[in-house]
Length: 591
Image (tube, rainbow, N blue to C red; front, side, top):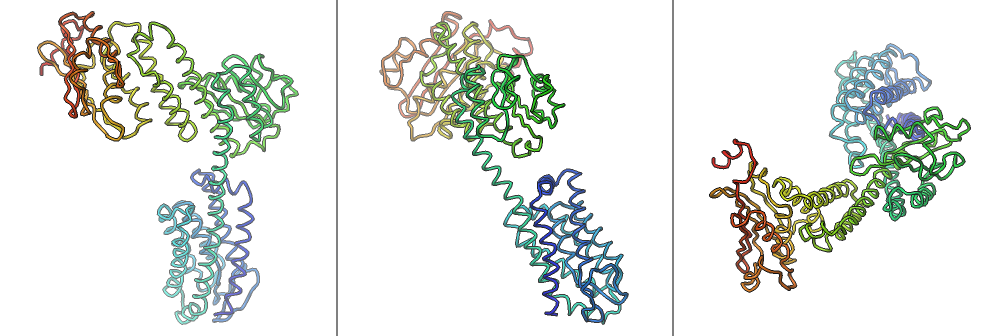
């Protein structure tokens, strides 16, 4: 029995060497990473099935309890058996790829073992197929790519080998021969297959871990490039800033050329092909036009796919990414390569990450443009007294998020766009639906809550019919802003409640908080005149009251109630008689 261990180690070594060589091949790694695709599944079945076949051919032949052959086995004596490492490849294949791969590998290895004959052929074939089925269906629980699954996988390999010994005792005839065989091979096969499974698994895990390390490095590189290009992309897609950005991207990526375009022309090109990919010139490739039209990433692996108008263009591969501002394609980023083999999955992932980051930076540029629009006197007068530091704080918040959570930064940029759009629209309208004002409030809150998570809670209790009521713009947002900024101390959380209901032909809109309240002296003048206070000037309340009085006259009112350390409530009452609603909407308010 002990003499069999060195021979089994030799067989395991052959498979481990093959597995190690395969792990160094890019094609094998790509198959392992994409095992959910049908083509990849078939490839994995073929690879691990081949491991099973090699195990059969290199097995140690045993006859009548004695090692009888150490040659390459193409046929086994009728009374002989094989000690091999077949189960090892089946277990790893099943755990790696799931039921389809487990069954496929088990069938290949098992049926091949059956073809070699021997009195254990049927038992070994059955146990091999069973091992593939079991490990395949258990694959989701093991997650072979995680290091914590190592022990479980080795135990599974040992159990499958033990099961094989049991099947040999159950099916192989004569029983005495089967029993003697199991006594001879059980310990060596169980021990060596368990050890081999461990080594094989470590090689597979190294492939996954190397991918994670590569992704981490790519993420670091992408963030570094984004940080270096931030000052330039924030200026928009102009030639000077994009030329500097293109040089930085070229330096820190594996690309041979970088191009940046807007919707009409090339604004920057650095690297190979600079003689005809000229800034201010027309689009040099049809590929770029497709990306601008379709708004999606397109990869070209040949010069023909790039479709450059210059027949001597050295660029043979490219990845073209759309640059978007608020989901609208405003330009493209192009990474070109002079050899198509350079455009691998690593470069593709880096390019896609950069495209998202640069789009965020362009949205920041658009944000800066919108900020300059606020200098308009009419908008400044009617933008609901936005705190002077609000825009600055929002930009800082989004800037920090761009580096660690681009999706959240993008959402905040969209909300900031909603906020400014509400300002622009409200400045040109006397009345807007309450629904639009609520959108304005929610956009404001999303930005403030990103800066101060869990500082306060805002609830809305407004029935759908009330959302159609027309109100003056900038009525609700400044009330919520006041509650957030002045009602709560920095170390205390609070709640702001906004609700609406119908009373005597008027809509009552209430904003209330459970904050620190307002002193009687200040309360007496709020809404009547502005005040000089460290907690604010009261301009917003004065502005709201003045506007509703000018629009509705005595039919409308604004009332402020407050109790120190209890909270503040602002009640606005607006007449419903002037609303142009459908009959059903009016009736629903009285139900």
